[in-house]
Image (cartoon, rainbow, N blue to C red; front, side, top):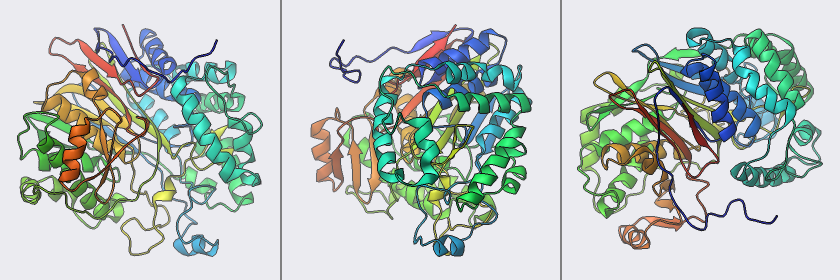
Length: 536
C-alpha cells in the first residue's frame, strides 16, 4: 500500500479531551498509553510521567534518551515543587584543554560536549519523593518496547531520516561513533515509517536502572563503562563526575499575568525568558490574536527577553546578577516603554536545533506534573555507551570558550539550559501543566500558548494548534506556512525580516492539561506531534 504518512491534505484540528480520573499527554501514543497503564495500576501522576518519559527514550530516540537532562514542576498535595536535573561539565575539562585538542569553539559531537546526564537520577528522585510505585514497575512498559520492538511513527520517521543522514555525514569513518551506527541505523540506513526497531541494550540499561534505583548509572557498571570509553576515546568525563552528581530541588519562579501565575524553573534554565517577556507584555492590552500590534509587541518583547536572559543566565553559582530584577514591575514597565512602532535590532542569539520531549500527567487526586527531558541536539553527542544503548547528550555545546563570556566553560559547571516545563496556578490553586519542546523555541512557545489561553481565551487544543512564529536572529522571524500572508507583509513593513517556513517541525511540539473547578481535566497534544491524550 502506498501513501504519504506525513500528508495532511485536509487540515482539521482535534478537539480538547476531557476526563475525570486521570490524564497523560505526550508526543507518542505508545508513551501516553504507558502512563495511563501505570495510573490504572495505582500509580499517581509522577509514576505515570516517569513511565511515559522512559517509553519516549525508546520510541522517540531522535529527541531524547537515557543520557540526557530533565526538569520538572510537580503539584503534589497542595504544594508546588521544582526539580533541576541538569548535569554539570566534567571536573577535568577546561577551556585550555579543549583548545589544546584543536577547537576554537565547543564542538557539537563527540566526547567534548558530553556533560553528566541528570535524567536517570531525576526519574529515581521523583519516584522516591512522590511515587506510589517502584522505579522498576514504572519502567516495565519501556523495557517491553525496547526488547520487543515498536512501529516507527510518522514524525519520528521523518526526523530519523533527517538526523541519520546528518549522522552519516558527521560520524562515518570515526570509530568513536561506531556504537551509534550499530544502535540507531541498519548498516548506515535510518529506520523508516512502520519499521520495527529493537533496542536490546537499551532494555538492559532500563532494567538495571530500575533494579538499582538509578544507582547503576552513577556508581555501578554503566558508570564504569562511561569512564572506560571516555578515557579510551579522549573524553573528559570520569566516574567520579557521575558519583558526585545529584539533582537540585528548587523553588519555581513565577510572573502574574492577567491574574494567573505562570511558573517556570529558575536559572540555569531559560524559563526566565518566558517570564521576562510576559512581564513586558502585561503592560499592554491585546484585543485580537491576529492583530498586527499583537504580533509586533510579542516580537519585540521576545527579543528583549532573550537579549537580557542570555546576558545573565548560567549556572546559578556563577551568576553575578540578581535575576529577580527582571521580574519586577519597574523593569517590565521600563522595557515596555522602549517598544516603538518599528522593529529594533537586539543582541543576536546563536541558533541551535534541539531534540527534546515534553509531557504532562494528572491523577484522580489532583496531583499534576510538568516534565521535560532532552539529549539536546537530535541524538545528542553521537556517543552511545557500548553494551547499554545509551545515547549521551551534547549539552556542553552551549558553553563558550571565551573566558569572559557569562557561559564560559568551567569544570563542574551547569550551562545555560534550553529545556523548560511550565505550570499555571490562580489564587494558589493549580490550573495545570503545559510545555512546548524545541530548543530556543520553548520560551517563545510558552509565551504564545499562555497568551492564547489568557488573553484570547482559546481552548487547550486551539492554544497549541494555532499558527506560530519564532525569533531566529537579529530582526529575523520565521512563521509557519499557514501564517496570514497579509500579516507577513505588514510585519515586513514594520521592519521585521520574515521568512515563511516550509513546514511546522521547527516550531515546537506541546502538551497541556487544565483542571476545571469541578475537578475535570481538559487536555490536548498538538497536531505537530505523533502524540495523543490518554485518559480515563
